[in-house]
Image (tube, rainbow over the protein chains, first blue to last red):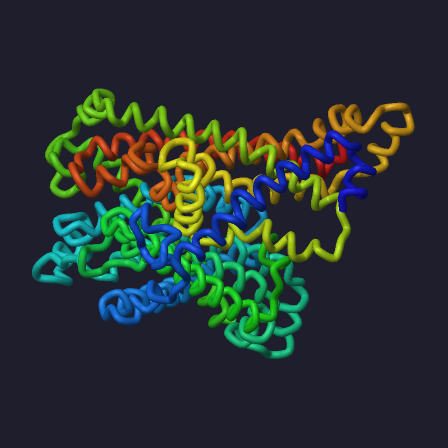
Length: 295
Length: 268
C-alpha cells in the first residue's frame, strides 16, 4: 500500500496522507471505541482504587440493564419505536420517491428536489422545535381540531411516545426519500411499461418490479433512519416527557447525573450493538453490501 | 384506465400534502416569532411585534454560543477537510486485499449513532486530561464529518483522467508540483462543497456535541436548552434567522453545483 502511494505522490506527500489517515482511523475512530468497550467492562472506581484489586473485567455493568425493569423496558421500547418510525418513514416516503423518479417531468422533479433539500439543510433541533409549537396543549393543531369539532377538549400530544415518533418521522424523512429516489430512478421505464402491458396492476407492478429493484435504496434508507431514530437525543428531549424517555436519555443520565461513566459506556455499547444488529439484519434480508450503502 | 387516472390524481394530491407537511411546521415556527405573546405560539394571536429580535440581540449567552459554534466549525474544517482529502486520495490510489476492511472502517462513523461518537471521544481523551469543551467538540464532530468530506472528494476523484497526471510528470513536474498544479485544482470544487457541508454539519450538530461540549455551549445546544427552560419567542427569532441564512447558503451551493454539472455535460 505504501509503495503504491509513494509511486504516485512521492515520499513526503504519501507520508502526510498516511499520517492523516492514521490519526483519523486510529486516534479518532478505533481506539475511542475500544476504550469505550474497556470502560464498560470495568467497575466504577475512585481514582486511587484504579489498578487495585477491585479493578478487573466484569460484566456487572451489562447485568444492570437486565436487573433494572425500567431501563430494560425503555431499551426495548426504543427498539420497537425505532422500528415503527423506520416503517412509517418508509411508507410515507415511498410514494413521493416514486413520483419524483418516474411520474414527474424532469422540471417538476428538479423543483421538488430543491424543495426537499431546503428543510434538509435546516437544523434538526429547529425542525423538532417547530413540532413542539404545533403539538403544544394550546397550539394550532389542538385549536384546529377543536374548531372542526373533532375533539371536545385539547389533547396532550407532548406527554407520550406519539409526539416523539411524529417528530422523528419528520426529522429523518429525507434520509429515506433520497436513497429510495436514487434506487427507483435507475429502473428502466420499459420494465414498468412491460409489466403494465402484460396486465399487471399498479400494486403488482410495484411488488414485483419496482420494489425488488429498489432494494438497495430501501435498505440504505431503513438503516440510516433506524440508526438516527434509536440514537436520537434531541427529539425525545424536546417532544417527550419524563414518562416517554428514550434509551439515549438514560445513557446521558449515567454520564452527567449518575456520574457513572462505566455504566454509561455499557449502555452506549448496547445501543451500538442494537444498531449494528439491525444493520446486519437488513443487509442480509435485502442481500446488499456496504458498497451499496455508501452511494 | 380510469382506475389508473385515479391513482395518478391520488399521487399528485399526496405530493402536495407531503410538501405542506414538510413546510407548514417551519412556517408556523417563523410566524410565532412575530406574535406579541410571552410563549411561542400562533394561537391566540396577541398582536404583531418585532420585539423578540431585540430581546435576542440583547442576549449575551446567545452571542457567546454563536462565537463558540463558529470556533468549533472552523476547527472542524481544519481537521476534517485534510483528513477527508487524504483518505479519498488513499482509496483512489491503493489496491490491496485489506481495502474492503479499511473501507468499512472509514465508513463506520457514518453508521454509528452520534451520541456514541461523542461518548467514545469523551472517554478516550479523559486519560490525557482533556475534558469536555470546544477542543473535544472539534475532535468528536470531525470524526464523522471527515467521512462526508471523503465521500464528496472521492466522487470527483473517480472522474479524474489520470493521463493528465502522467503528462505533467512526463513534462518534468515532480510529484508535489503535479499534486499542487493538477490534482488540487481539479478537486477544488469538490473540496469547496465539502467545506460548506462540513461547516453546516458542525454548526447544526447536537447529538455528538452534547456529550463533548462540557461547560461550553454551542448555538444548537443553547437553543435546545432554551426550549426546555426559559422558552420565549426569542428562540423563534433565532430559528428564523438561522433558517434564512441556511436557505441562502443552500441556494448558493445548489446554484454552483448545477452550474458545475451543466459545465460537465457540455464537456468544457
